[in-house]
Image (cartoon, rainbow, N blue to C red; front, side, top):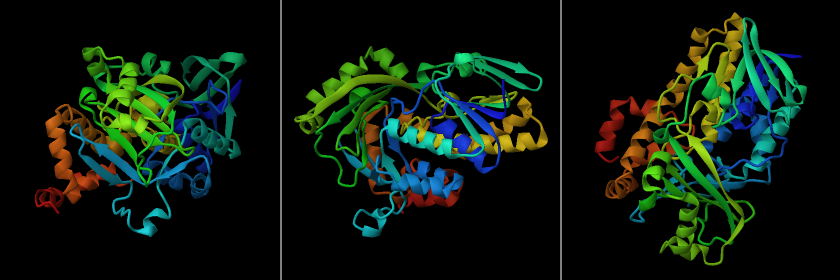
Length: 415
């Protein structure tokens, strides 16, 4: 049997960031994943400013290696397209100006395939002195004992850890069976992803695009440019709405690229590469209990995806870092009780709660096309509203703005 202070189930962005933070704190951990890397992961492939900011906090050298890597495409922002086709461009940094050369020297957002990004993180994990990684191990049982969790899996794997991090994604059996968190259609998005080549009309600064088409509300169609000249193209729609409309998302994606009066022009010479694949996005539109005796849920397993933007990787990094910091406190005090680990929940919602709540309100708001068109028009002319959008993709503390009366005064004065 393998003994560890912390066992992390899942080596995606949440699990890897947690392991890297623990390593930086000098805490030994093991990380277990059912896959053998490199492996693909169905995703939009966008890395917002939160990712590079979090990596810099964990280890500036890792951030530097990511910045220098060739598998990513530098991206400077997001284009929101309302149902009436009004566009709003939001830079990843609050003061982004596409006409200033110095703003393009060090991008803080990227687009890259998850097979490449996740493998980058795993390679960083394998560099670390305090981490042992086990690939190709499917965990089959968790048993809580007085002094830790016993974890068993395929290939004869057996380990005992004082603390568990559950980071194995949206379909985590632990989240469902132990933490008692279940999929709810009104707090869950169904997603479809495809890769295309020869898509035309991409933004010159590689902005990712979110098209809030009327038939998809409160979801959207996206186009994310990729390093190889291709594009990650997909559809995300609230599961509750998709069920009510009896919508086949795969057929809807094909219908959009073939028949939408604006988008089809960009796909005239485009070619589908590979298959169209589906996945689920567990949203942070509802506050949940994400820890218990000797465990913490992180990343998608904790249901922390932004309800409006679909931001998942940045929030996964936040949760991984915060879980590692809480682990350090619990190991120091030798207190792994549910009451002690509830501090992790408090910190998660202190850091991300205001943003998740705002995004949930926006998600509800955009169900009405005319309201969304009006809102985007108003935002284009309002500096404060544009800053709110920027906060969703950059490590800017949205809470500080929302709690200041001066913010609302300036908002009303359109400054």
